[in-house]
Amino acid sequence: MSQLTREVVVIDGSGHKLGRLASRVAKMLLEGKYVVIINADKVVITGSKAAILERYLKLVGRTWYSSIRKPQVWFPRRPERILWYTVARMLPRKKPKGRNALERLRVYVGVPEKYADAEAVRVEEALLVSNVNRSGKLVRSLTLEELSALLRGRAAK
Image (cartoon, rainbow, N blue to C red; front, side, top):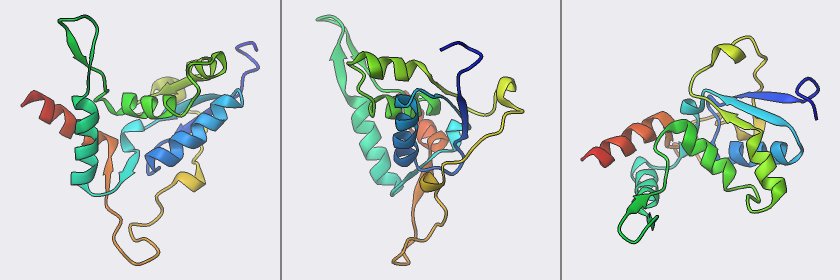
């Protein structure tokens, strides 16, 4: 497929739920579309702040050994990388189809100049439309920007 005929979908991540957005983007990538996500720092994770932070600190705390003496932490802390890895883990990345799909994904914090005039779409089924769920309880949430700041603060201490 040439550069001129490819279908590029620009998605504004503001107010989208992380998991729902990632699964829809993974499907688009497997269909052969090029996907650009802007405003990745405004994507939302639902749940209590303590539960979200506990889960991500556990992921950050995992280590792998690149050599016998050098353990490394292998989890992103920047908002765009957290979103990128969430989508990557929903693709069959050990198969060529999944690796090729992942090459068609671009994630940005904010809006780059290249996509300032592009028509950004919203994934309706992934939007967080209300802060109250069907049973009337308050839906707690945290943006990727806030999570990233918390993870960086914990890592520095």
